[in-house]
Length: 117
Image (cartoon, rainbow, N blue to C red; front, side, top):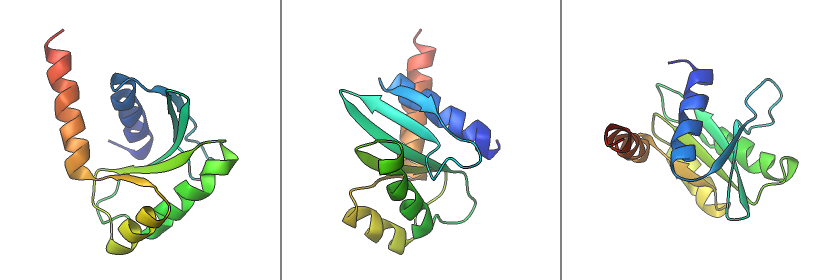
């Protein structure tokens, strides 16, 4: 699965969770691949499909995209893990991090619900 497909897959997961999802992922997206909105809150979501750990630069990009996309906060979703520096920066900026374990749980829930329909 390539990066663009991963963005769409993450978007489908968040749609399943009740979010409205806008795909923004394109060159010049300013660190925001998806805009997730629910209950009046807008979240700038950066997706990273990596084999290695995601560094604090992804958090910096996501946080910087918040005012550009008129969002309330940032989120970074990865199929990998986050470095300690990324976790520390995310905590300081209230940026939600979803790593491979949390993402795996969301995927399992999504598949379970799809199987029951």
